[in-house]
Image 1 (cartoon, rainbow, N blue to C red):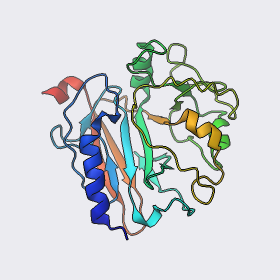
Image 2: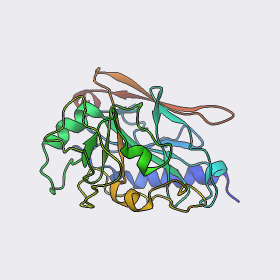
Image 3: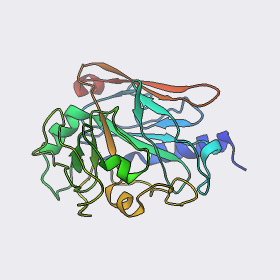
Image 4: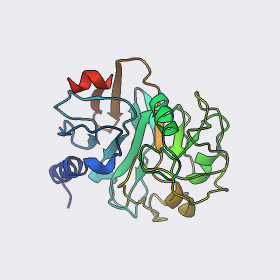
Length: 253
């Protein structure tokens, strides 16, 4: 029998001691506050008043005992970033995960890293116009409300940061052409996706997901400072966290 209290304590421990999951171009001491029962966001920390900046990748976790079983089909938890859909995937621990970052900063940072060199490699970039990769990866999956997304390896139509345009206009196609060569380095520790066909694995390309995950969804926070709101629209009441995307020099003060 699971309780919200147990999940809250577990995720708080993970987020405090697991802050190294995000490969950062700079280091910020992170002390996480958990202001919601089921929604946990890695940028939520008291020391910097929920500010983040540059190419930092934000991890979002929904830990909800109502949608936790691995062998049962659930509707995907509805989570948004500034009103735009953030697509969540269930991992083998029963929790739901997603990652997001600022598009402009992700592209700029990726351009500074050579392929195969540890640093701020985001993998390869995909635009949303004409995209067929997402729906072939998982039935009903679409990243249409984002400004693009990255996958961990090369797929048909994806481009590395050195050649991708901004805005991202290239389309990623189907799930063919996956090289399996892992190019992403900004997320170094992540959960394995649940492939149980009786649960989240229904309609999932089980071969492809292990090669392209983690996926980073990109949004536009180009106005400095930008208000960023993450909203888990849970039945019975929304769980919301507010952030500010700002200049790193202001955060360090």
